Length: 160
Image (cartoon, rainbow, N blue to C red; front, side, top):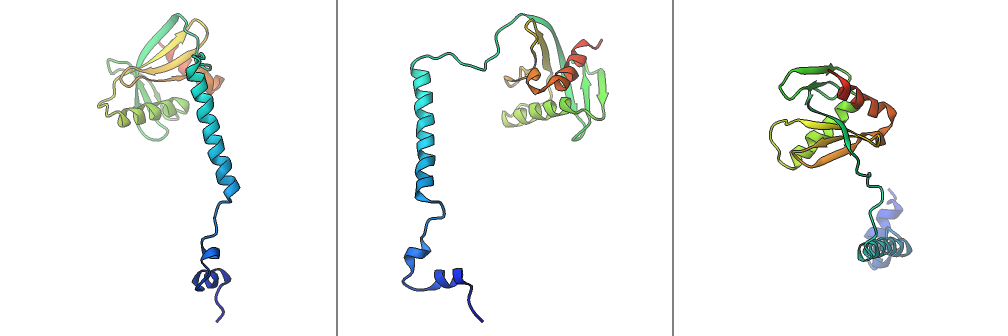
């Protein structure tokens, strides 16, 4: 039975040049290193010149805020509770609210935060709405995820 050409090449004595042939072309490796060094140079220049951060939300006055506990039931179901434990809303299909709850839960696991302390939903004067976890320092600008996602948290903020 004939051997496969690749295994025949690898097994053949004196063929170390073929055996050690690069999987990634040398030009590609050099390009990747160049991109990494260029990125480092740009960041270094930005820090050295004191360039202001971009993409950071402007500070604004807080118009409304609410503390809630996001209780994860399963991958879709979330119960939103008031800090006193009373149910604000039970969402069998929690959608984006459940996604935020999962992100908060993961951040707390990583930072070894025990329990399920409340998060803050905050509406700012400039139209921003954010979810903030005082226990970890984590926050998410909810308007950045689209109008439906923002609206889900606006409803929570406006509930009585």
